[in-house]
Structures are given as C-alpha cells and as structure tokens.
Length: 428
Image (tube, rainbow, N blue to C red):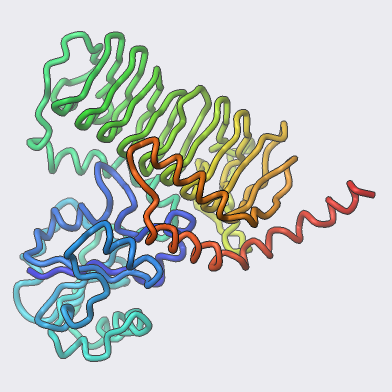
C-alpha cells in the first residue's frame, strides 16, 4: 500500500509547535503521529506533503523520501492520510483500502482517502483542502472514528490514553532488563525498561494506573518517581524528577523537578526544581531553575487561550503552556495557565505572572513584551546549544527559522503595541 501523509490547513492551528516542524512529527503517546500511522498502515512506499517552508528540512531528515513530489503522488493508486488524525486502536486499513476509491472520515472530516491517478490531476498544495472536500461528496465514504487533533492542548489531553493504547499494541517490542533495586508499585507487566537504560537505586515506578516505559539508553537518577502512564525517551536523563501520569518526555532531554501530564518534544532541558503541568514543550527549550507553570485557574474555570489575537476556549480547566522551539524560560519565571510562547522567545522573571501571549523572536523584560531583532545572535546561540548535544544547525534549518521570523512579523506587531503605552508612562 502506497501512503502519503499530508498536512492540511489545520496545521496552522497547532502553532507554535508546528512553526518549525510538520504535524506528523508531533508526539502523542509513545511516538510521533506519523510514526504511528506508518506502524498501522505498513506502507510499501511512503511520501509526505508538507508546507513548502518545511520541505527542505523534512527532506534533509528523510533522505530519499518523496517530499511534495506530485509526479510520484500521481504515478499510481495511493492512500492519502491526514497528519492530524489519530486512528482508533482497532483500525485495520486492509478492511477499508483494498478495493476502489474511498474517503474515510472522523466526525465528518476527511482523515484518509484512497484515490486513483485521475483523481489527482488537479492536486496542488493550494487545492488540497478543496479536493478533500470534493472527494467527500463524490467518492464512496465511510466513518472510521479515532480523533483529529485541532489544537496543541488536544495532544496533551489525549496523551495518557494514547500511552495506554500504544503500550497494549506494542508490548512485545519492549523487552525488560532486570532491575532488582527498583521500587515497583503495581504490576511488573506494565513496566518496560529497554536494553541500555540505566536505573539507579531508590527509583519508584508506579504502574497502578498505567504503564511506565523507559526507552533505550535513558538514565533514571536516584530519587526519581515515575507514575504511569508515562514514557521516558531514548537517551533522556532524569535527575530526582517527579514524572506524573500522562507525561511523554521525548529523546535526549534533561529533566528534574515535577512534570505532570505534559509532552516534551525532545532535546530540551528542565534540569532543576520547578513545575511543568499540562503543557507541550518544543525542542531545544531551556527552562530555568524554579520556573513554574500554572495549569489550573484559581476559580477552576475553563482556560481561555489567546491565538492570533482571538480568545479561544479550550474546554478544559487544566491547561498549561505551549512553548516553541529554541525558547528560553528564565529562572523563577511564572507562566500563567494557557500561555502561548513562540519560537526563539526569551522569558525573564518579573516577580508576577507573565504575559500569556509571547510571539516568536520576542523577549519578556520587566513583564513586558519586546522584539528581538538581531536574529543572527539567536541563531548563533541555537547553533552552540545544538553542538553541545553533538548536533549542528544546518543551512536548511537556518533558512526555515528565517522564514519563521518573517512569517510571524504580524504576530509581533499585534503584541508590541499593547506594551507601548506602558513604556511611555514609565519613561514619563
């Protein structure tokens, strides 16, 4: 089965996480969304359709894979799969896509479509969303369920359940290395420690409410507590951390303090004490000592998030922060519930709750938003940070970040005038 995972216009609603990566690279459960699709469909050929700005970086990360290759796409029958779709646990693609054209939907939205070459004559990045809508009305259609990710907090909300589902599907893939000194609460059948992982004495794993999965070469320091369902990624190191239920920590992170029901994309630091709850943190983020993230309003009401100048209700009283790549959160910073922080932002403490909307390439100084205009300095810092983990900032990534800077200019203009009157009053 030939598969093409595509981004639709809903990718924009997942910013700031999708400013610097395609939707299918976002984590939920034990893996990124695209990896789960591949495990379910087991494609004989795989390609991707992404926003043009991301294409060079995606091609660099996946050499030899068709990226926005429309000739490959049209060459023969193919199944297009929406990157925002999380298939149900009992989904079997062979039951749907073996015969003729078919559109499958989740709550009425197109999540996958098996089409022939003739259906792709008018395919382009600018026509994709309209084609999906047309196919929904002209081709055979079946509802398949699952869930479609609309906002960043959807990933956080679904994470605990997805860890459970992934664990049930993949359990044989996780061999257990004997660790006799671990303090286990619950069943050892729900504890998976991959080969190469190091678990020091005085570590507690609580599997009573879900599995605890420690992936290859992770290091779990003494006095760490892991509450399932949770996942600790490859080469990640925990330093006396309290990892609460519903947390996914991606590869190569350094984590201390308390993390509750949160997702950390990878390569990020929260080495010291401090609380991170019901949040999604991108890559190469540094969270300083004592930084605190509120994830609950004091009146227990619904959290409202500011997105693109609009107030968006989350439908939940437990919502933390969403932090873009290469952002820095200073020691002792206080982040309000429902905070959105873009890429390459710098947040300094002010002794009070900080602004809830910080656009990309902005700083928070004395509690007010200001623009960082010298992006070359920011890129130099990013290069140094990546080099410390044995990685490098590639030309394709640099070009992507410059495009993100241009793309987010309007967001900065909308945010900065709000702080200008306060600056004038202070200077007077």
